[in-house]
Length: 97
Image 1 (cartoon, rainbow, N blue to C red):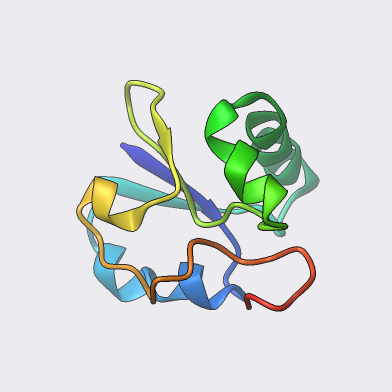
Image 2 (cartoon, rainbow, N blue to C red):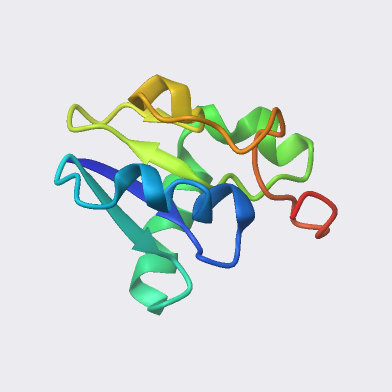
């Protein structure tokens, strides 16, 4: 199962909902719904080098996809989904969402 970390209020995340609805290959984890989900995501973000260029740009790094083998990507196309736009992820400063 592919984990998708994100928030429903993020347009890049919510764009995925119709694509994953009814597909048990994916599970969406709302990082704003529970502090333990946020902690899980932040631990991943703080320690995985895939986030470095995103953090340097001020991006939060959602949606984030964790494959069954532990591979982490921020590109929907890597898991067979379509992107909202060419923008990579929501920005911490609010300019990307």
